[in-house]
Length: 234
Image: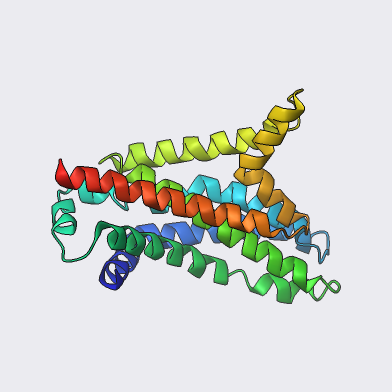
């Protein structure tokens, strides 16, 4: 697993993908930071974090599209299938390499809490909660993208489908405010990644939301393992 993690993490930075993802994320997120906090001289990061997951839904497919699609297209997946490690360890190694790139990008934003202290006294627990929520939500998003990447050898197709799924999840969150049925509204709110994330953006830290993101991550990592095991013995 560690060897797979190191290999894939290195691959992100020996190609433009890792740099492009980090650059695009920092440009967009800092633009929102400038508009919401610098221009308004506000120490409240709520609006900024409320938009970050939406921004990331556009660019996470850049990271996840190559994870297994590249292996399948180049037929190097056979090396992974015959390696002296389980498919599950390969899946986790690739997943962690992708998550590590995101964490590197996220660490570059730690200047925000320092800057906003110039405009007031921001609530530390709210900021920590927002960072934690973003991490767990993106961890689930990456697991979804990893699963989709294992289904096709085309990186472009993987990226498009991944983005479409993220968009569907976003629209699902929007539907909760317009559906008439209380039961359907409750169900949509419960399964919506974005609705749960908004709870954190508003400073409402709930353990069941964290458990939901972790469970979603585990489910899609398991599904990826099953898909690859099927390909292995096909």
